[in-house]
Image (cartoon, rainbow, N blue to C red; front, side, top):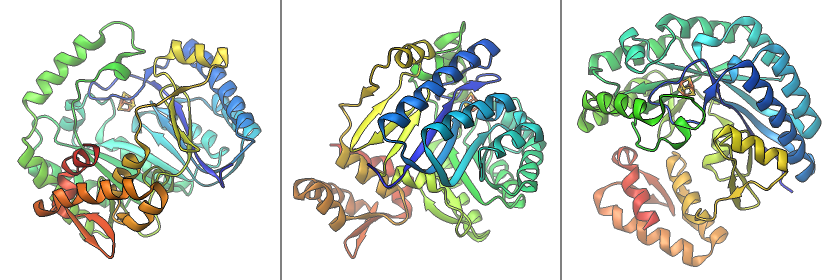
Length: 386
Ligand code: SF4
């Protein structure tokens, strides 16, 4: 088996649904939480047995809003994880919504050895938070960050740019507010309003896709245009670079030694196990996924059925796309040794096609996106997929 894997634990519950969000989420009712956490503990035990109690190299609690769980629920989850895995992670991250993180809950998570908090700040502008349908206030992020710092956690802040009616000056202010809090890591994602509702609506009664569709159509009509988004991305590169953050992945910046080890595992195409609704796994070269809809997830775990294999996944192409996201780039020689000369040639010719557009630079047999390529990465990925 593996030398150690990344373990992702999905906790789908949210106090409310943010209308732009496409993750597998669900209302945080007491009854639903109880049934879900029971199934999650069973899945954790099953997977630990199946994989021979593997060593967990990195641990990540994502969602949803895992910071919503109560201390007793966290303690039960900790017991399940410790019983099933050799749990000595170099890094353990908790995703948190600034509105739902208090010191008592944080103390509960510390028993699980959390080392890092990923805080969904999104904006420090009250109008921006309203535009995104968020329920927290701008000052909540600073309070949550201070609480995390007090107990010795590293902190990553998530920001969203390109929300309806945002201005360049407003984005600059958000970057300045984030930098002023001196987090260890910052992620900046443009607001993407996908028309792919499946995971977003699976577990929320009433409303459904029509409500989200109306919201997204209205929001899309007042979003900044692509040119502005590109300028603001470059602004983030300049501001964060000047503040000492290294741009190590398309949407991620870190202080020295503070990159996300768990997410690096995804981008470097290592093995990871995802447990919980909608969680994906990559073990022994096979990609698989759990259903995002809670009823189907509970039924799968209860029946002991295998998770669905992603037969469409093209492992060599996915590995190339993931590596190109990183500043370290894609080592073409190593890639060819791993996937064979046909896959290596396919990637080299796809990269040659986008070379004249200045999207990729190859040096010493390592391909890297250029600054322009980071903006237009999807054009490179489309060539790889073709
Ligand atoms: S953005 Fe975060 S808090 Fe909002 S619905 Fe999605 S997972 Fe929940």
